[in-house]
Image 1 (tube, rainbow, N blue to C red):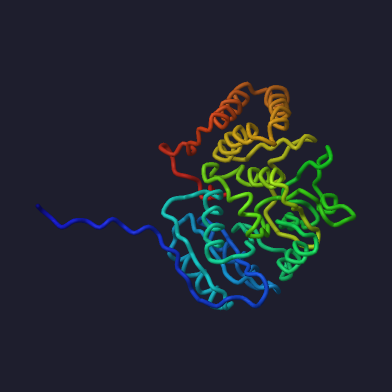
Image 2: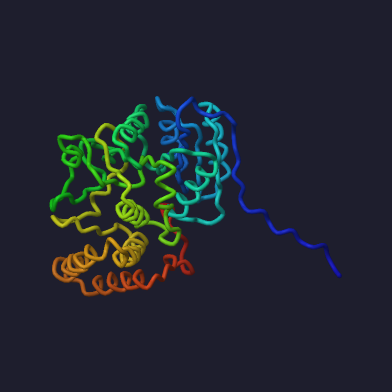
Length: 332
């Protein structure tokens, strides 16, 4: 026998900066997914860690596997007296896989409530989490979301939507006079889940990677019967995605090829699931008209249809994985 046996490398291990728990009440752990955006991540974490209703722990899933990110997050946690665990992944799990891993880790860590955040946005103020807790308790909800508003103009939604058959772009129009939009959420930015809700609806599907994991959780929430919604008493600031939503029908056209790939491939899968099939029929008509009539592009129509067909067949390949590297923002 020649040579010494080799020891396989250990998988990435979570590390922890402190052991302090938060004050009395339910144990709340924040989960943040990041990739190659350290400055934005730390800006977000500063606001998360300075909440009037403090989090009891922080889980950061780093899809970029950068040692300097882990060091910076630990320093921040220590400065705020918050227990931190950083999971540095050697493979980009996407937003779906990153949130799934982080949410399960938070539950295993003893979370009774899990607060989700992305790295390119942050809570609208120091009382955001306090308001979310209050809404969750007073309304008897299983999940509550803040208004996700444009980081440059908080009066406008970061992502225009359709409610009651009309396109909604203003934050006040989404929640209306009641200050609450029932059975609506712009996941996952700032969403607060109870552990019991996650037991019922599960965590995001890793196969979706990005663009569609939030729609899948929304679908599960509605089918589960768990009460949820969006409150106007709290906001989450996020870069505007309005340029991707076109016309009165709010047709979503992503701004990059890799985003289009995942968006349409995943929509093909989602519109073939229970609770989405009727909407899927309408969606096929809307997009066919958009590409064939408005854009007059048979090439785009064929590409869109091919991706939808891939999703329906549950063929979850990565975007041209063998030909080019994943873009820096491919975790969301």
